[in-house]
Amino acid sequence: MKKKGFGYLIITLLLIACTGATNKANDKRINSTDDFVITLDTFHVNIKGNLTHALKYRDKYYVLFEEVAVNNYGGYNKRWLVIFSKGDIEKKVDLPKELEVNYLDFFVHNDSIILKPYMDESIYCFDTHDYIWKKISKAEDLIFEDEKYWVYSRDFGEWGGKTWFKDKVTGLEYEIEATKPLVNKIGPSYYFTNGIQILKIEDPLLLNKCTGDITYENIEASKKCYSWYGNATGFQVIYKDTTYNQFDFSYHPGIVSSFVWKNKLLHIYETEKATYIAKIENNAIKPIQKVAKELRFFGASDSYRCKNLNGTNELLKFEIKEKQLCGLFDIVDNKIEIHYITNNAELYPKLFASSKANDIFDQRLNLILTNLPNLQLKRVEQEEKHWNSYENTPNHSVGIGDSWNPKKYSIDIFKSFLIKEDSLISYTTEYFATKKNRLVRAVIFEWHDDTDLFKSQLHERARKAFKTKLSFLERCITQKAGNHIKFINEEGYTEKTWKTHNGLTIELEKMKDINEISLIIYQH
Image (cartoon, rainbow, N blue to C red; front, side):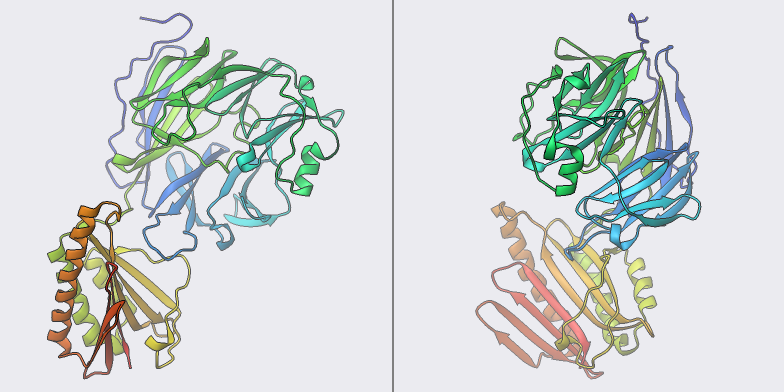
């Protein structure tokens, strides 16, 4: 059975079974009628991070992953670039420290792969031969280009944004109040898609003509946040989502992207249950074909340059959180390639029962009290792996207070490991070591409340759990180090101190009104 003008896609397979530990893609094909062919395959990675950005360059996929943040150390998370060639991982490259920031744009321009931090003037170009990043001077806000125009766009935050058409012959510029749209072209007309509306511009010369400080170059040079210019003119609204509410943060179905096929503007439309190819009729979205299910597309608002620079369709990113899956959605003519990426790394810490967490603490304490003057970091890492703890070492150095380092050791290595107890408590074990001989010099344990403070019932359970935890810690330490030699009981906290026969100091501190416990062990 066939719908007029479009093939009716019969899907016999919707998801790939993500098994195996190889990096090679497992090819599967879904055949359809003549209009659209959908292919599915799976890439495999082992990276302790989530996909954030991606682009296609010379038939390879360049994908950025960012380290999963499960610590409270602040700073920026580590980032990696992974290059996929025919489904295999060709290379994994660390990003420079300068590029480990929150907001990035990742795009191709002038046949080069570019990374631009949003809040920084620094711009980097990736050398695809030597796999290194090189600093360059400038990257424009170009979002589209054809034989007549360069199209630039800037976002001014709460004030919205502007998009400029710059005539390649006259140098004159024409602007429209539109924020970083996806641009498609059919014949002489340009179509702007931003998810909640689609605009049609039949002739850019009918937009507001820019003069003086309203041109793209002058605004870019002056760093002005915003300048209003003229009335809205020269375009037609062909679709507007009248149900959209910017203050409603619940899930809202909508247009993810637009593309051109057979001189028609089509759209990738996402609902809670499925993803469709769709068209617009009388300001309504009309699904044509079901493409897949469970996909949740995402993209950063600061990553917008060159999405569809020369009419080569935007590469989309999606995730399926319940299955720890992410992937790429690539539209090439009438072929839609869905590349699932399954990550074999442990992205998030597993839950331990309190009894198991206490047992691990007891073993840790034995290891530290017995070996600390000569405890090698390698031994620690072996034991932590054996205990199945979750490493959450931040991507920057962490120091230790002078009072916990009375011997003035050089502390230049920091390692942190996390244990989550049920849903109430988590605790980190932090090792401070010396790089020269890789000896551990001090250890800090910190227990934190994982419950929602606004849920009083859970908070009360956590309060009781912390009281029980403190009693357990005091008993465990006393069994191994004898009675405490010092006790401080002040209004905000209590602190007990032990000294061991082999020259170690143990300090246990509990905040009275906060579910938080600290334990420090160091050489005195």
